[in-house]
Length: 69
Image (cartoon, rainbow, N blue to C red; front, side, top):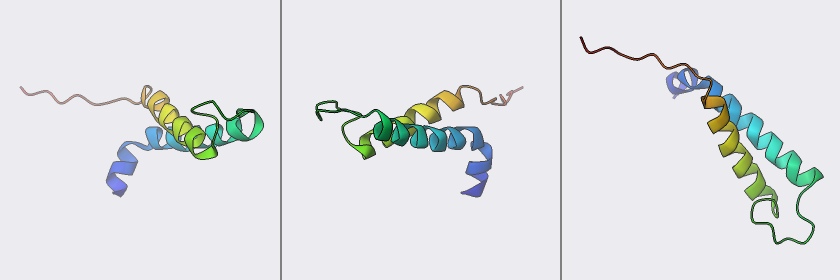
């Protein structure tokens, strides 16, 4: 497990950052009437932020391509 985490540390940092950002968005802005699908509850907003943060940070991760020569 730790080998995977070291290999994908940028994506893991993105998940953590996105989760914190999603929670803070729900807490500070949120949805007043409860009809918003993502921001109506804290767990939806936190999960969405975690997914988006992980995807965004993984864009900047370099992958070494193996040549099959």
